[in-house]
Image (cartoon, rainbow, N blue to C red):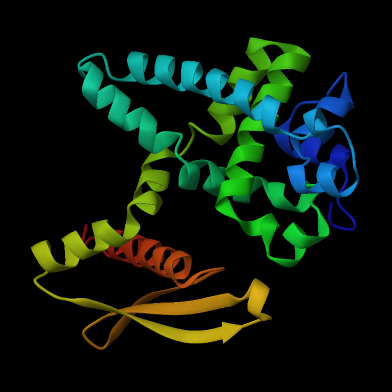
Length: 233
């Protein structure tokens, strides 16, 4: 857990106070930490992640079922998959700065584990599992509705930003986009990349990320927002 960040602060952020705070701590404990500290491996977040995944699937399935009464099973399944996939949950975890509250082993810490989508998305599901065990279905559903199933239009725009931008610019505007690496900073194991995306000679947006791909996605998302605001979408 990063200095200055406490579980009490996280409880305030998520709007739920645990009766058993040990559940929240477990939900934020990566296997690298339990291995390094020689703690019982069952005390990491993996079992809670398993449970949270099932709760999330049920809640998101009911949400889509009620929101789209005319959609067939195949389309519902596709939409659910995009809503609860790794990048989607990592995006939600980023809003909560969940990575800052996690307990990681030194190796995982030095290689940027706090910002890795595969870790933060798993932790997001583990937190759902912890809330469910501590308080039942109602607070778990409220958490999912607030932090996963909200602002879906903007989230979908983010998840598919590069392909959406390419389709818009080439199909509707008859232009091409190019990505340019502006800056690469930080140590080898924890780099930050800053990228711009341009249409002809016009910069549409910039983005930053732990990988070039993530930075390009962020830049494309900002470009889409810009084009939407200028009524090109």
